[in-house]
Each structure stands twice: as C-alpha cells, then as structure tokens.
Image (tube, rainbow over all chains, first blue to last red; front, side, top):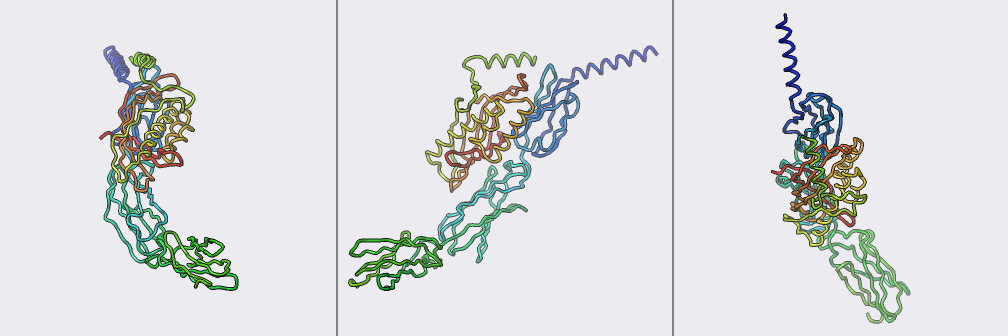
Amino acid sequence: MRILGCTFVLGSVFAAMSQAQAPLGVDPPGNLSAGESVSMPSSGSGPATFYLIGPGQVAKRHVQAGENVQIGSTEIATAGNYEAIICTKQECASTSFYVAPNREEKLVFLVHPSRVAVGEPNAISAVVVVMDGFHNLVMEPEGITFRATTNEAVVSSPPQMTRDGIVWTRLNSGLKDGAVEISASVGQLSERRVVQQVAAEPCHLHVSAEQKGGRVMLQTEPVRDCRGNPVPDGTIVTFTKADKLGQSTVDAPIKKGVARTEMGFAGSATISVACGVVAGNDIQLGEAR
Amino acid sequence: MKPFANAAACLLLSIPGVAQIAVTDSTQTAALPRVELTASRGPRNIEDLTRRKILHDYAAAWRTLDTGLEQNRAELLDDYFTGFAKHEFAQSIKAQAGTGIHRRHVDHGHKLEVLFYSPDGGVMQLRDNAEYEVQIFDGDRLLHSERMKVRFLVLMTPAADRWMVRILQNVPAT
C-alpha cells in the first residue's frame, strides 16, 4: 500500500514537472489560406494572453497555455505574414506564419477609354486583376480569356496567363460605330464592360446656303466620317462668313446628323465651314458669285 | 531571459544613431522612409515626373502607415491609401486601438520594381523589397521585436494630385 502511494506521488510530481518544463509557445499549422478557421496548439501552462497580429486584423484574448487556440475565419482573411504571440505574466513567445490568398472569386476589370473613335489601333486597354473573396491578389497564374462582342461579330483571345495577379491586353477599335462589349472570364467568373465606338473625324464636309431676304440659312449635309459612320450629335461645326463688314463665325452643334445656322447677309459674302481638323466647301454669295 | 531581451531592445533603441521613427503628433514632420526604384517592366514607360511622384508618394504612404500603426490613428491613412488597402489597415488599427496594442516600425528602406504600368496610365503594380524592424507593444510592454526583410505586391492608382496605394499585400520572398 505504502509502495503504491509513493509511486502515485512520484508520478504526480514527474507529470507536474514535465508540464512545467514545456516551453511557452504556439504552433500554427503550415499552408494556411485566407478565410480558413484554424485550431492552433499552444504549449506551456497556466493562464496566458494570446495575440494575433496581422496585416488586416489584430486580436487579443485570454487563453490557457497548453490548450488549442481557436482562430476564426475572419481573423485571417487578409493574406500576408501574421505574428502569433502568447504571453504569461513572466514571458512571451511568438511565431510568425504566412496566410496565402484563397482561390479566385472576383475579377477587377479596368477598361479604358469608355468612348473611342472607330478604326484606331490599340485604342482600348483592358486590365484584369484577379482577387479572392477577401480582396487578396491571387498569385497563382490563371488563364483569362478576353472577348469583344459587337452586333456583327464576336472575337475571343486565347487564354492569357496572369502574372502576380494581373493580365492585360490592348484591342483595336472596330470600323463601325456602336457599342462593343468587352468581357474577361476565367472558369465561371466573368466581368463585362461596354465601350462606345463613335465616328472618327468628319469626312467631305459640305454646306449649302439658302438666301432669304437679308438672311442666309446654312445647313450641312449629314456629317459622316470616312467610313460612313454618322458623327455624333453635339459635335461642333463652325460656320464662317467673310464680307465687307469683316468676318463673323457661328458655332453650331450637330443635331440629328446635320448642323444648321442662320446669318445676316448684306451684299457679297464668302461662307466656309469646318469641323475639327476638317474644312468643308466654300460658298460665294451675292455680287461675287 | 525575455525581460532581459526586452530591456536590451529598449536600451538599443535609446542609443543615439540607431535608426528609429520619431514619435510625433503629425506625420508631416516625420522623415520619409528611403525608397528607390530599381527596375521597370512596362508595358508603358514611366514618365520622369511619374517616377518621382511614385517614389515620394509610396514613401509618404509608408510614413502614414507607420505613424498610424504606432499612434493608432486610422484617419492618417486617408492621405495615401484607398480601396482595399485603406480598409484593411484601418480595420487593423481600430482593432489595435480597441485592445491597447500598437506597433512601431523602424523603417530601413524599400526597393521598388515596377511590374506593370498599364497602357492608359491608370494602374501601376510594384514589388517592394522592404526592410524594417517591427516592435509590438501591449500598452508599454514589448511583446515582440524583429528585424524583417519583407516583400510586398503593391497596386497604386492615380488620384487628383498623387498616387494612392490600393493594395499592399505581403507575399513570400520566393
């Protein structure tokens, strides 16, 4: 009986010694991904404070050293280096660990410009940033397919691999005005943007005049670019009249494809018209005709 | 042993000549960290003015981040951070403030490489090889101090008069 009692006491002493000698520490698992919850074993004994210090999160809580510390999924949602620290009143122990980005869940798609002239080479820039569900850049290469869709045609690129989470391309604008839908996709993820293609500079600008008493009514023919696309309404056409009193100009916006204006008329005059870099025909009115 | 190490760290920091961040009330008076641009990969060439702005604004962003983390002032991030980066660091600073923790960065410099500068000039991605010492405090107690070489992937976008940090993501060195 006495021997049994001694054995029990010695056993308890050894157990207590071994527990007391376990160094204070935390042991994070390897290969953690953003947004995972994790159970982190700790060593040591007694009441302690656990700190989790990361790029997007800081946590502090009371724990029992030697027990597992539970880390919630929101606590390691940001990819990057974390520091796990456990402290008793006497000492602290720390371990760093890395949290990798999770799998792709979001495409940030930047397309520029939103409005472009037809027939321009490399006029549209499209950049894709691949992110996980927690706004971390996804570092693993992903194959992104770009697609341009108009009423007439669909053009797809072969998959282009991301590098450090980014891939980009440049596209020519089409030859016909109208909307072009540009999309980027990987797996089930897809993002789309619409770019408005508008006519290029006007071509063959032509004005006609109708004299009514002391006034002259001026009107262009439908203003189009060299591919026949109508120049957008609101584009300014400048009418200039030169006569014995000097020179006067009127800036008139294109409405429903044509620009119109009315000017005073006394004797002979020369009327000219211009839009952007293009000059149209001249008209001689009155005595000079 | 740990208290001795902590005391040694405190002593070391109080020695003149050892680099340390000035604890000031304003970020404007703190010196900018040293930032250099070592390489550029296109597709657009960096204009000289843009290069100078990036060096300045990235350094200023780190100054505001360092001061914000040390003084637990999330509002300092407004000047040079936007989007996800601002949200994450502001969240971290608010959590620090709520638990009595603060972090001190002793910045030893940044080496930047431009990985991508978009053709329209609207996005720049950089890799930063940074070196700094981080000290983590709970109140006055130094919990952890470590000199680190860290790599970041950075996404910056232009704002009205400066480049803003939109993503600042810590990545493995390899």
